Length: 255
View 1: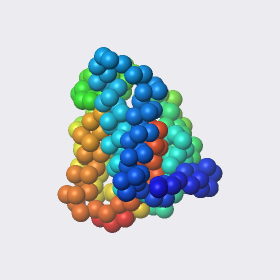
View 2 (view 1 turned 90 degrees about the vertical axis):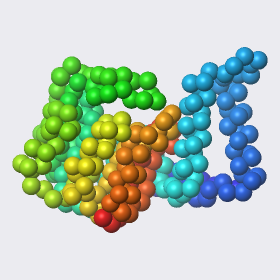
View 3 (view 1 turned 135 degrees about the vertical axis):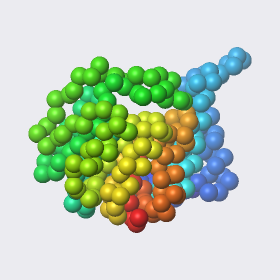
């Protein structure tokens, strides 16, 4: 049987994966029972969007049961970000991609008061539709209105592929301590890694806001990261996740 345990501060960890047939049968039966409880039994067709979300959750569970055994679980994104900030060992700034209203960048800045925090956003919403989530071009726009941020935050306004090159030319740090990827889609995430790869070093912590647990998760932040580490032969470890949401943190081990 697979078991879980509560660690320090209520952090939950999975201590074994459901590898045997009995465990898998019990898991499938539990999922089916939970689905019927929420959506009911019917002679009519089920809502395919509900089924899609359930399928994504099952796929994510299988991935986590293989790749994230023993990795701390957190109740929400803020607790995961807090743990990530406490785990920093690299001397360098924090970078956030996808600032929007400024909640998480101000949280990071408050947790790292002696560090510089850079926030990148066009503040015009998604540059293209988020396939699989139903969010179209311009979704999450704040109409160019910049949020109020803490004193150790610097906002970099514009599309990532327009602003990253001049930003890197004028900022001389050579190591990134924390990278918060909250840009949702594959193309934006791929752009981040294509520009920042020289400053992502052993010890760099990356927190993804939409890594898995939604339909087509394998095509977006997850896909861009997996392509990046495969192409550059980078080793990493999972540092934490939010099992009831989409967030995952990783730590780079070697580049």
